[in-house]
Image (tube, rainbow, N blue to C red):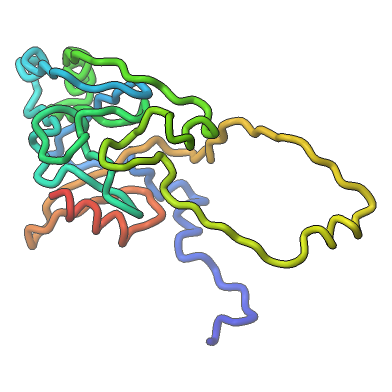
Amino acid sequence: MSVVGRTVPRVDAIGKITGKTLYPGDLFRSDMLHMKILFAGRPHARVLDIDTRKAKEYPGVVAVFTAKDVPVNEYGLDIPDQPVLIGPGSDKPGADVARFVGDQVAVIVAETEQAAATARDLIEIEWEELPVVTDPRYGMKLDAPQLFADTNSNVLAHYRIRRGDVEAAWDQCAAVVEADYQTPFQEHAYLEPEAGLGYFDEEGRVTVEVAGQNAHEDRAEIAHAL
C-alpha cells in the first residue's frame, strides 16, 4: 500500500498532454482495410429485405456483411437480447427488427474509407414500419407495443425499495415541493469519434484496439458473437 496518501502520476499523463497518445480513429496499419456501418435510422421497424448487390460491386469493396453472416448474432451485458446486425437470415429470434435508430444493419469492408462510405449508401432496404413508443410511462403498460416477442412486458426488472419512515420525514420538513420533472437527452461528449482497429496478432488471436470502459465485458461479447 505504498501509494496510499501519496500523489501518484498517471501512467498515461505524458502521452496525453503532449498529444502523442492516439485516438482510436488515428490508429493505422499499412495493410489495413476500412469498415463502415449502415445504421437503421428508424426507431422501430422490421427489415423485410436487404439488397447489397450494388454495394458489393462497387470498386474497392472487399465484403459486405449482414445478419446472416454473424455466427452468434447477439450481445448484451445483462441479457444477450441485442442483435449484432439486424435483418433476415439470422438464427436469433427477432433479429430482423430495429428497436432504435442506432441498430446496425450491415457492415461494409473496403480498401479505402471513401469506398466503404459510398458503398454503404448503395445498400437498399425494404422496411415495415412498426409502432413507436416515445413515452416510457406508456411503454411500461401491458397494452403498449412490445419490443421483444418472447416477453410479455417492456420492463426489464422491477425493484421495490421501502426503507425508513417516509411520512415522519415529511413531517419534519420546513417545506415540501411536489412536481413532475423531465430532463433532456444528455450525451457524455467524449472528444474522439467511435472508431477502433481490429487484427490477428502473431499468435492468430483476434485483437481489438478501441477506447472503452469495460475491456473484459467487451472481450466476452466479441468472443461470444464470433
